[in-house]
Image (cartoon, rainbow, N blue to C red; front, side):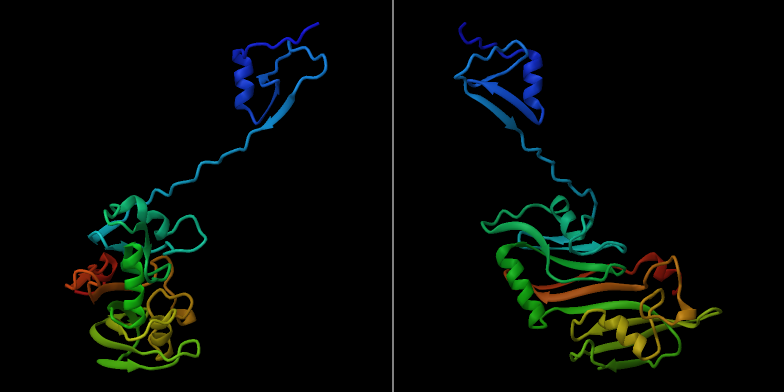
Length: 263
């Protein structure tokens, strides 16, 4: 008896779409395929390709050109890391791809805490990412924050306490104070960090007895505000554009929850 090679039927094609299927001499085998010896029988196992998930997370873009962008970072999301939901993973869908030759996936060039809101600087090309990182290393970016703090404060001050064993400096200016039945006094404070240590502003303000409202990690135990988030906002960035050489000043207005407390 000769070798019978059945033409692929619809059911056979369906088998080919499954994870495993068998061919005899290069033809998908069916229940009608006879084996007499000498045939080439192959078991094929298809690799299961899991489509890459795409994060759908709209961001407010405050500025954008071919080299860089500045976006508003909302509270409750990491800037980057191993999590799926991060600002870094959402940038590609929110920014226009650069037309420059070294265009790459947009990357944040500094960090804001999970609970902090405000301006975040992003590089869109390999050369701009390197240049912006260098700007931060050389303290070429002037950053301004606003926070709501608890308790009596001086009109202005300079905090130079070390953070994690490293030199750190934060300058503050008291903008407005309102009485509070629960907290005694609440202050709107302008902050200008001169260094960029992790949690620097939060640690510095807590160290002088004026923790940021809503800070569960560094706040005073009986004065923790729950459910309203951290009252720390990255307000502005000022730097010289590394490619156009123009002076760039970009700001992100105070959140409405700040405005509800102060005029």
